[in-house]
Image 1 (cartoon, helix red, strand yellow):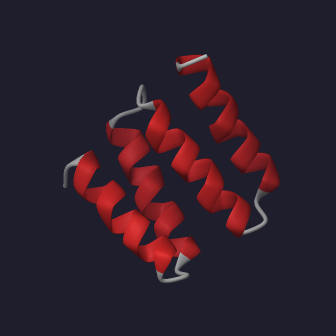
Image 2: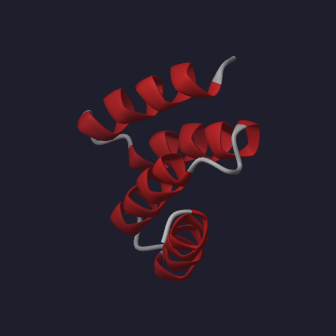
Image 3: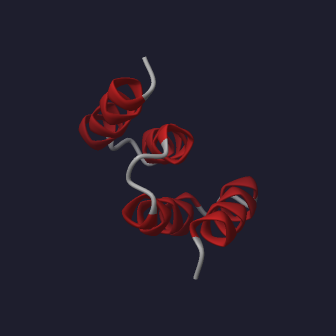
Length: 68
């Protein structure tokens, strides 16, 4: 499945309050496009909804490193 499709699914899941499933979809998308800072920041936001602060900070830092 393409990263773009995964991101679309993740956004809908997050909108529906399914943050765990959304995070999983963002993670899969990030594995497919590891140099995409937008995916990483969306992953970070989704992880924050799950109170996974440390993992969210890592994803946010990776995003900033790619696109300061």
